[in-house]
Length: 148
Image (cartoon, rainbow, N blue to C red; front, side, top):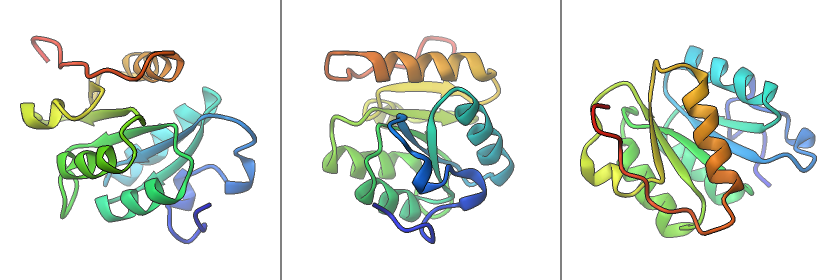
């Protein structure tokens, strides 16, 4: 298990409180958004670990039993496409939802399982999470919807 010094404690569930809940790794460099997302996910019954950059996200992903990743595209230093590619090489069955407020290149969308645009509210995000976590089949790639 990952040490508490590796992740953003203010936007994460305590490691000791995972108690069988699905664990979501939330990655975004906007601290306010990361905290709001943590509150939403925790209130929805998920355990959450939060990272503010790609390096931190990859460390957590490699050392924690993550069930799903919420990944911003526009990260400092390493874009979300690079992070998603590394994650899929290491654990290809873990679903990744790209969450972004800017246009995401098709090459990046081809790597992830779903795409949710920032600013659409909590419903599309929670619906995508639920669909991917409850899917009994191996997660499949989901192209971005037209007009997004």
